[in-house]
Image (cartoon, rainbow, N blue to C red):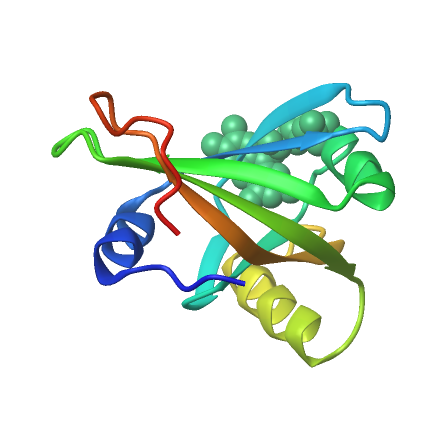
Length: 134
Ligand SMILES: Cc1cc2nc3c(=O)[nH]c(=O)nc-3n(C[C@H](O)[C@H](O)[C@H](O)COP(=O)(O)O)c2cc1C
């Protein structure tokens, strides 16, 4: 796993919506917006599965994911790649479920997707675009 830098963490925490990409085992891609996204430590991201359908089906057969976060003010952008674990019970699941349910009991809080970051790539337009930074 790799640890996000302070700049990346700052940008991440200011991001409201994260496009989350997954793929089936046959390589059919999918992308969906996610907002209940938490950076729990320098190398771990949690996402609440409230309404995931194809995303969840993909993760059950292929744990790889990618997402990006972008700051329109500074134009900085990073891509994160990671491997996912899906949990429907346990302390970590209950922690995010309780937080989500406290906002509204209407959220189903079906499962917790834990992403362990495996790589970070530059996504800002320019000479370093696409380069691996972590
Ligand atoms: C702005 C926005 C934020 C969203 N955040 C989440 C989220 O955090 N968790 C979730 O499960 N669904 C979230 N959704 C809903 C999913 O993106 C939506 O159910 C989508 O259809 C799932 O796609 P999939 O079938 O590819 O999994 C959000 C949707 C929008 C528009």
